[in-house]
Amino acid sequence: MVKPVIILNLKSYKEVLGENGLKTLTIIEDVAKEYPQITFVVAPNLTCLSEFARRKKRVKVYAQHADPIPVGAYTGHIPVEALKILKADGTLINHSERQVSLDIISRVISEAQRLEIDVVACGGSIDEISKIATLRPKYVAFEPPELIGTGISVSKARPEDLKKSVKVILERSGNISIPICGAGISSGEDVRLALEYGANGILVASAFVKATDKKKKLIEFASAAESAVY
Ligand code: G3P
Image (cartoon, rainbow, N blue to C red; front, side, top):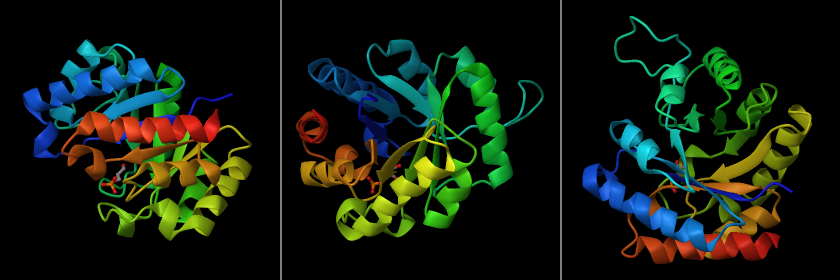
């Protein structure tokens, strides 16, 4: 059985940059210790990625984006191989705030598979995730962009689309890709519903980053995921 995944996308939020980012990693590691039945992933800003990858213990560290180019004379790019070299575990691709073409998504997935690192390929519509799922990344994330940052969760606002996304991802990937979801998730109930509707995990950003007590909020998410599955 695949353990449910909680992916914390730290984006470029000031609250989790620099030293505050490293303190946040410690919080996530502490919660991961209490919830071994959950996979925890953190996707820090690129400026923190190397330090997160160096300090990680139980938590997986993903980039927020990668480019399908080889290492070499490419200014301002993030080669997938560079993530492997710094011991990152994977990358998001095509997040609605960092969209790329289907061809780029395909090339990043191929390169990541060659280097044995994970890919979370994001899509904002059923049509988009249907195309992405055929590329068979490890995870396909359904994230309606209009709900991102609103605190109105995909599981409460778009239950039928969420259920449909799970079906489409499994069908189009030949049961290879793992369906997950994100956007507006802010409570344990949002997490419980997402898993009840068939997602095997969630992505969350603002509800965690902006929480007055990040540890308490992450425990709320983790205990909801644990009780939904076990
Ligand atoms: O990648 C997940 C992120 O886009 C969701 O954002 O703030 O709605 O949790 P948020």
